[in-house]
Amino acid sequence: MDSFELVEEIVGNRSRAIYEVRRDSPDAIPSEITGHVGRIADAIVDVKRQVGSLRRAGQDLENLLEASNALNRERNLAPLLELIMDSAIKTLNAERGFLVMKKMGTGALDVSVARGMGEALADEETGEFSTGIASTVAHEGKPFFTANSKGDERVSEFASVMRSDARAILCVPVNFQDRNLGTLYLDNRAGTPGFTEDLLRLAASFASAAAGAIENARLYESIQAETAKRASLSRYLSPTVIEDILKRGDDFELGGSTVDCSVLFSDVAGFTSFSENLQPGELVLLMNEYFTVLANVIFENHGTLDKFIGDATMAIFGAPVSEPDHAIYAVKAGLEMLEACHALMAKWEGEGKPTFQMRMGVNSGPVIAGNLGSPQRMDYTVIGDAVNLASRMETSSERGTLCISEYTWNLIKEFARAEDKGPIMVKGKSEEFRVYHVLSIDPPKRDADYVQRASPRV
Image 1: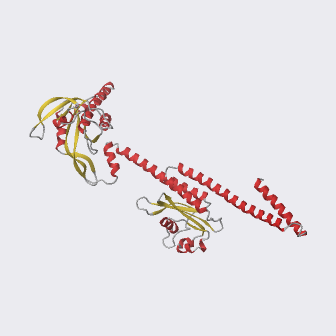
Image 2: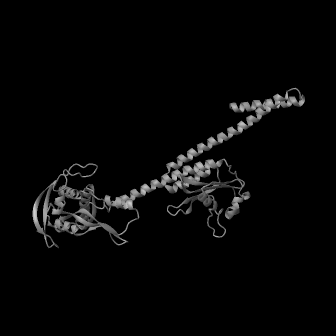
Image 3: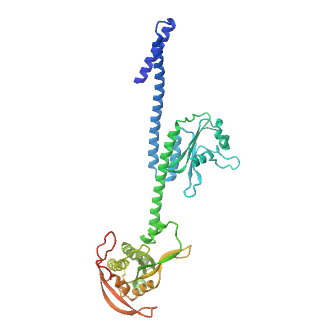
């Protein structure tokens, strides 16, 4: 017995004793004393009621905290909604219920999960699940409570509810900040303990905790989806194109614009003799290893891997993300690709595998860059005379060398060493073009990932 119960028992005993004495001798105890004892007894009853209410509130808060912690531990949306429904029924002492969620984008209401409803709220004409009260609460943003649905005029407009055996109904909006995510509906049938209006505040707090958990789960799944999408795209596209795709979302159209960039072509010299003694499976494995090495170098130098064309590679520097020093990155990538290829060939030779040499070419200038193709199948690429000349630079290169056009040389000559090969005729051109064999490039240190020039460009 605690102190409160002890006081209650003592006052009760004194009250009974006073009653018995006054019954035998009405004047034996003054009426003031009798009144005082009566008021003390009434005060104790009132305090007991308040203590009971506080204890229930404390238990409700404990249940709410337990439910909130459980909801926040679940990161996936579908099982979270199931957990919300089960926790709501347990925490709010409900017999059954359902959770209505707004669809992302359209805002249409949809029953996501239900417990024990069966055909209770089925529409008589359509047979579909009726969400009249839940829809009203979602639209108006105000909770709905009734302890006796049969005697509540507000319920009369919801025919399916009137036909059901629901007696006490509790329905609250599930809001995250100022946005409505859905509605939580609970009811108890006749013959079961009903709800009290005090439960509304607990229900609102539970709905708020549920909304936070839902928003966190959606954010988590969105991050997971974007991560998976990024990983999938990275198998086909360069990081710069992936960033552009993710920023645009579904806003992709055919078209392009003129940009200044540098285009790099690389090719395997003597590919036919290299591959003639290899089985198709062996050739694919070797070429995939080779292309992986090249792709890593291109990406590290902020390039866009445009495509693999047989044994050739095409990369773009300076598009779609504008890069003022695209020529520096393109030439630097080309030299590093030659080094990487040389290291890979040394590895293959040690493993008893056939080897080859590669040749490369770079040209800079204006191109049309954008999404080219058809609405059903489009490619991010570049077209133009500058692209064609880059291809000619590659075919003009000797094995194990990188040749560039005069246009590119004028953009990098402050940082590079090269051998002037003189003017040459290239296929498809009526005039000669000067070609440079690049030996090395030493760009200045990057500042905030941007190549700064050592001196102003003339």
